[in-house]
Length: 245
Image (cartoon, rainbow, N blue to C red; front, side, top):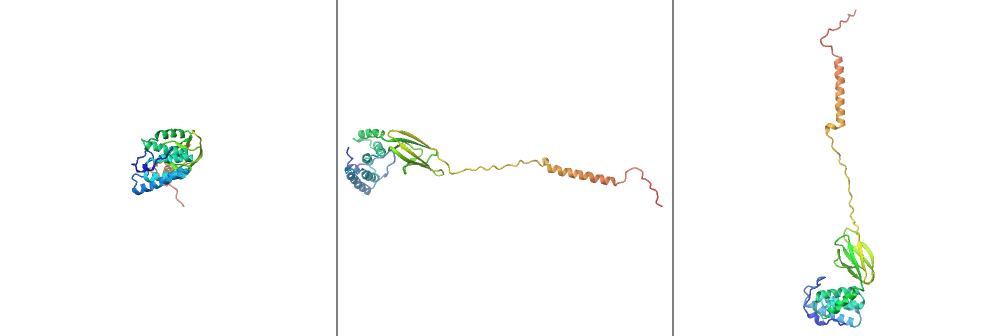
């Protein structure tokens, strides 16, 4: 299957549905540099140096924003055997280029690649967490799409400020489906301190008040009794004591 030719770099730019275009309005210099990367990518591809070809086509796409280059990127990844990236590039090509003689072949190839990659659904307990696979960011939670991973083991990390980074290993199998439920642990601990509230007792119900009042009353009664015992009786005759000789 052929690569798209150099003439495509002179065509108007087409917007991508997802992700957004890397360069909304490339300058003339950007387009000239893109042509150079494109030509180098063609040479690498023809010589079977697919990783180098993919790198050059990616740079040409970044500089020119020509969606047709996604087809060449997909072809290069296909040559490497990186089915996951090839499928992603082909899908972006189909979303961006609505009229192309290569669409039927690309559509069939995407369907075939879906059986060669593993499908991993990632569910995070905290929205807005950064999800990385093998050290490469793939988006923030909740992810809009299921991850397509090449068969084999992969390192999955989920990070969010204020939470411990969740790490796990996933093994993708061809055509298999896997769901990962990541429960993230908060690093912020809330300590609740219970402060006992003393119930106010009305002053007339307090024991010490009535104890004091009782003491005063008793003291007053004793004093009154002593004073009364020292006073002469009122209204009676006085006893007459005999004179001392």
